[in-house]
Length: 255
Image 1 (cartoon, helix red, strand yellow):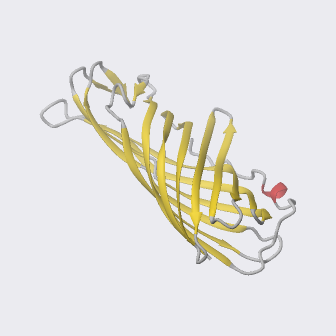
Image 2 (tube, one colour):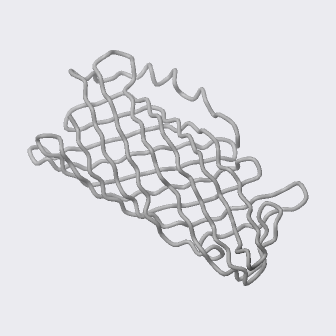
Image 3 (tube, rainbow, N blue to C red):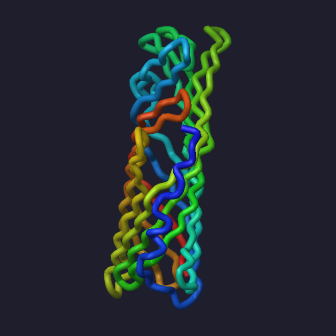
């Protein structure tokens, strides 16, 4: 998919009425996400069509821990959007003995062969957003540019067929961004939800998070939530139809 799906909704976003912050604000945090890996991948060549390879049944994936960190700056300058940067380490490996012959990037991986797989969908997000509401109900709307820089590789041991094939995952995609938070008055407890989503041609991304949290008077906070991430893209010869979902626990500081 080596394409930049840019020029999406930026002009319309700048026309949305916004709630201006009185002072500069800053938030930094991180979370660990235990995600269940599901779905299929395939890689074709001009000469040979690849198999639809199931992450769990063929490659032995189950769940894995992933780390995410973020920082956001909000300011009182009119019309200039706030910014949030998020770095996600979504890099997992699995090992399995194949129960059928599969084809990946023109190579045949034979039944009973031991295959080590690495799926790296690590990415950096740059989110520009406006505060639409800023009181006990908070609402942010904007645009995220998510830049993937990873790989998908399947390797067999030297004692076997000694195959090593890799497809790079290298593309940038824009996503509509929305975040809402509802504060329970006088308690510090809140409920929030965050969404990044797009559906464009044959590519689609849906990334949803919901959480229950607590923020102290000095800005220290924590939350526990659930994230559901679906990715259906074609990047050159690689096609991925993947689902990741699971619970996460987060800590943050906001001032």
